[in-house]
Amino acid sequence: MKDVVISIRSIHGLGEDGEDRIEFTTDGLYHYEDGTGYLSYLESEVTGLPGTETCMEIRPDEVVVDRRGGVTSRMVFRRGEKNRFQYETPFGMATMGMATKRIRHNFDERGGTMVVDYVLDVEHAVVERSRLTLDVREQQR
Image (tube, rainbow, N blue to C red; front, side, top):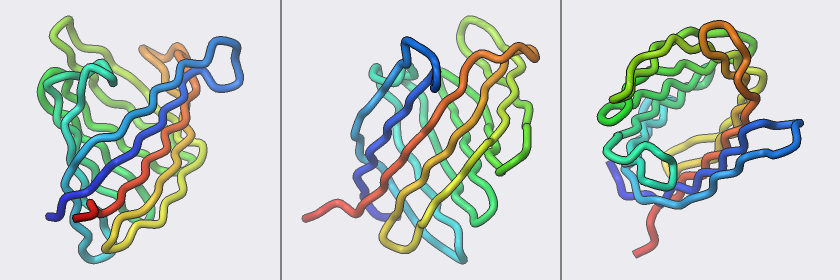
């Protein structure tokens, strides 16, 4: 694992008035092996998930996002597919669905960039359309 700088931009409510944007940069750890990027970082107050560790596996055909701590969930992004998952918080648990509309990434040993467009629903009611952009770069010493 090597130290990286992670820039994350998230837009919620795409195509509607009142989009919610979150942009932040954080430190994390990254490893690339056999075509898969492995990334981990700690969430913060900025994301509304303090005390949560996020781990990602970025594979050629899918991205898996595991969260543990204050929030627990396992989201699987695959282009053109809808996946259901449990979203557990200190306030309770909800069954959520996520339909991945588009996913692009170009990861290698040095890091990379990823863009994912998806639609999120809670108990089968559409909540929002979102875009997540993630940029991972080696820390300069």
